[in-house]
Length: 111
Image (tube, rainbow, N blue to C red; front, side, top):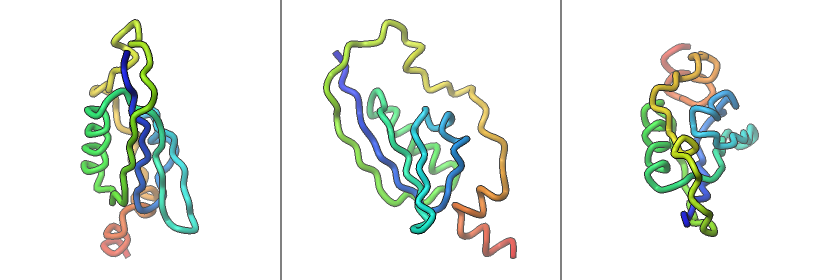
């Protein structure tokens, strides 16, 4: 049996839903009134949680909070493929509008 991790990551700014696949299928919800995005979902282990945090750091996202809790144990999947982090997956195409939404220093430099 494997215990999965239910996680919610909160970041400053709006993050387009097309980033969901790159963040291991986490759901992305934007709260435009507060200027915050939430990435929510279930991850197979804490190594994947740290992988998500690395990706956020690499993109320069401002992380506000992380909440994780273990879920009920589930049977191991029959194939390792279902747990892959797919390091070779290409990042979504850069969209300057996305950068303006979630990276305040970009707005200051490009006025």
